Image (cartoon, rainbow, N blue to C red; front, side, top):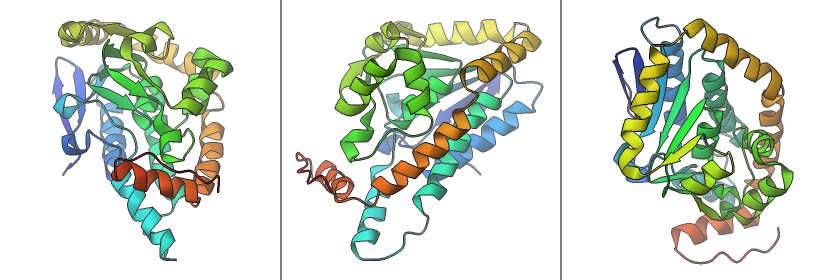
Length: 267
């Protein structure tokens, strides 16, 4: 039984809804696992020709679960070992990105409200990502004292180049869905009132199209653009693991929850 996602199938379109609206669909280990299971189920279901990912409650995903981060930081502060280690958690999130790339069917991300951190990794891993042009986005990793993960280092740099990627990663600044489309971070941005119609029209077109062609096109993209995606995620896991033990990460998490500016020490 799924607790963090909702699935449905209609007219050969399999929809997966990230369903933790109280946390703006923040990515937890459990949610990532359920998403992987749903994608695997759709991968081998001949009745599914296209997959749509969206979030409940008017938000796509706020990225990492700050509650889980605080639990881990508190454990380290007391000299205890967390229930799961950072690399173990990262493996689950990385499997999600690989599942999106490995399913031999088009994946469409329907992005509204807010999309941050790992939520943007999901959007970039999708074959199509369509957003409300006023949607608020950020690569928020630095804002919690961490660094890019879930393949975003590779995917963003190959979209916008190293200078722009460094800007977005190091400043953690917010940008809109409209700017994301202009920078080629996502496929398209449309007015909020047109988002549902635009996604549904694309999904219907893809569902009626040549599935064998889509399979080979996606395979070519993977071989040409992302042959080193797995190695990139392994590298990211190493430095995220190191960063989770730093004072700056702990300070960023506590400051976020206390709604104050962090006071970084550089340690």
